[in-house]
Length: 121
Image 1 (cartoon, rainbow, N blue to C red):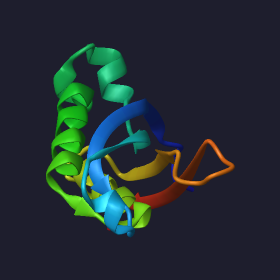
Image 2: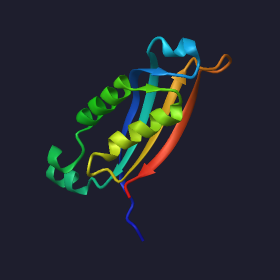
Image 3: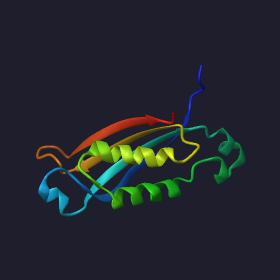
């Protein structure tokens, strides 16, 4: 049986990007909210208290923001996939869950969101 993975959460990361299928949505960047759940083994970091034994989540946050800002997306699904791919480039991360919210996308709802899960293969 596999041992359970530890988790790091990045909550409500705000990023600006071009997102949407309507012509009006392609004109200006919109704010999206990104929640990331990283699965990895944190046992060594818990013992050593060293950044070398974990994920530098400030560096990960910066990488996600840069990837989201420089790209243009039609779908939340694609944006979430790109965020997951960025996270999995960090070698210690074995699985990631990404939720992307687009506030104001629907007339009668606060937001619409997509949640995806990706693993290192």
